[in-house]
Amino acid sequence: MTHREQRHTVPVSLAMQLLEIVKRWRVPADELLSGVGLDEKAIENPLDRLAVETMCELLERARLLTGEPGLGYYLGLQKRVSVYGYLGFAALSASTLREALELAVRFGPLFSTAISVDLHIEAHAASICFEEQVNLGSARDIVLISLLFGLQTIGSALTGQEGGASVDLAIPQPDYQARFAHLAHDLRFGQPFNRLVVEERILDKPIVTADRMALQMARTLCERALDDLGFDTDLVDRVRRLLANDENGFRSLEHVAALIHLSPRTLKRRLAAQGVSFSALVERERREKAMVLLRSSRLSIDDVAERLDYSTASTFVRAFHRWTGTTPAAYRRAGRQRSLSDVGR
View 1 (cartoon, rainbow, N blue to C red):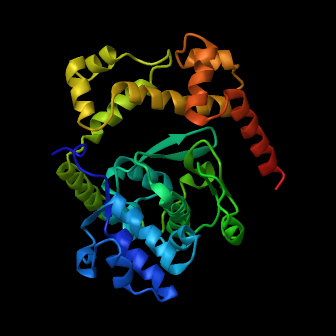
View 2: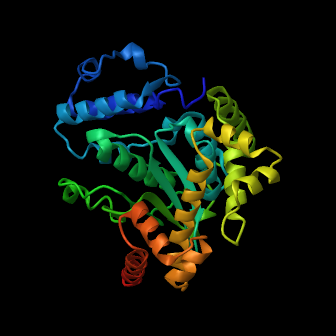
């Protein structure tokens, strides 16, 4: 069975963390779990997995029982790298934050396929983009805040350095945000994408727990786990690299297939087995390249459209609006205004 045929899941360790958090409100474990048809025995093995829908139900039930709408912040503050299993072990053992982020992208499906992860190095920062693949329902704010704010927390713990990272969230600012504003100075709501932006100056900061031998072991465990789940991430990564390396627009399916010695039909079939299509990969690369060019260059909108292989600027503008809900010009202005405000701090 391929992962496309399976339900999106998350590690049971997330539910275990949630049980620890709700104790401060004196919520019994059985009261929380029974509401979604689980008991403590069902989550005692941290290597087991839960359906994403079940985890979202647990989060909403926890919010109801605790009466705390900002539960995502509590989860984010208490986030530990161990919750990510083998992937967390690999991140702990990496030599730098850059290497840990690259591992997170490569082995992200081990955590969940419900949210895909992409890493893009821009002019002066790295952007880790998180794209929702499922409807997270009313628990969406809890999931996204706990994930991205939690990664900020983990990054500081790994490097021993506070600051240097900001969070963009594609959700409206919640009513409870004012209560937590002192914890999240660099968190912005209502943005086009969910992403963690890490300043270039800390990307190569050493990780305090770096261990090359442990990293080799962790990589092996992650690779085996991916194989068990039926993922062929090497193929998707190779296709994306080949798309991005062509400065004259984007290579065609036929061209990419020839470069990796597959027929176009076989390439399409193998990508489909990973839950992606060639056209979707092109679309994603166009979107990310557009963001980089608009923020880090003085190219006109017409020139950016040409670099992205669009026949006309208006076609590019429509596509960009579909991706982000705004225009390329407005996106560029917002980026410049943010840079000026950062300089003024």
